[in-house]
Length: 597
Image (cartoon, rainbow, N blue to C red; front, side, top):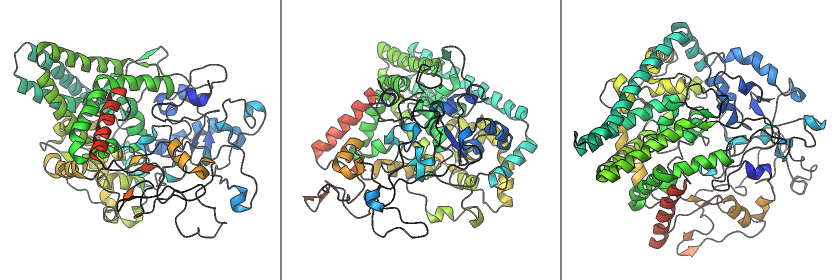
């Protein structure tokens, strides 16, 4: 079986890189396959970022990133040592009259022993064009036209001279690593207390010591608190064990509220949402887009059934999919040096516990109480996920106006000004758990490497001080129930149905010129502006999607060689009642199959 098939999922459309592993940092190419085994934070961060530009991660997830320069120098690809990797543009000769297109990248071949690889005696020349366009994650989490090679934001997170560098310097002066660890340990003690209360609630229910309503309240509160703890554990170091199993139990708690999934949380939340907040790579923006494809009337039952399926069987099937298709290749001849993931024992323990809860309540006649707490906890935490940012619309000029003009392109300034702190009862130390860890959210986004909400609260005064020096106003926390929930509920429950993405093979069949790998428009010579007018594949507001009903008639699909009227990657939602019901059934069944999130 080719490497493409063995490392890419036939069910989710996830496509991973091939050939010799590589990573890009600040325009330089590196091979970290040896270093990842000794990385203090564990190998998982490299395993999930192969074939990506990880510059933002390196600079924002380390307490002292400048100290890593010597390590980087050891693993720079020798053939490109001292050279800056820049993107190449392949222009077919019949469009530009130029030279023949550049041959396929050595990364795209099925074996590391290909022409152009060091093993074959040739030169190894990756460029930014060799980066994974869809980041090696399920494409339904991204906009259909997203391309990581061009769409990742370029913000200032430099080790010197940036707002992040100044915040980090102040934090390092006032807090030692040991001091912050103490806050993490207290945070973990509280987490254990909440976990014990959660387990005890089920025992007290089936022995009739507490009524069903008390069980429901305790379940919702403890599940939210445990998910908040799991939120921070996802950001912590994760050492790859030498044995077959690993047990980072705190990380699996991200599953306990039925919304967060620890299987994709490390990548989707830690590696994509935090460094690329609000951009096309921020999967948190699109996390519920599948739900939004349903008619508003069908949204609550459809999403609830989908997540019930995820809870009972879908997430277990998804784990198998990740293990079989979407994780680094096992060691072996011709497969490359990346290690296979150890079995996530913590994940399976939490999955087993959720099923035990369901089975016990079903057997003892308390299944209605279980279903009620499931629905309340699911929707409460669903709205929590999106309440800490304004994902109801794209980032506007009004939102950016709160950032001083000199810091508009500063990474830390955007993280702080585009995030909300949340309050529930008004006590920040309690609200951390009632808000699933989102009480000190701005500090968490500015310092994502810190391991607990308590450490974030302790650091908040220092971060505020630096922000005040640069003219950044520190707004009060927003009340979760009164201020944020009404807004997100209106958007996610009442907005019109969104267009669904079209599978790539369907889009390519409709647009054969795109399938041949031709770019959407000729590239102009250096110094000249691009040609006016929409390019093939470009979204043009106000124009219908091919196949969409407009004034009672169907918009035509373009013929061979003709540009589409709108993005070929989307299709309109079903217009008939039966079409909407079919979409509801498909979405619900997908949950039990483990497709979607």
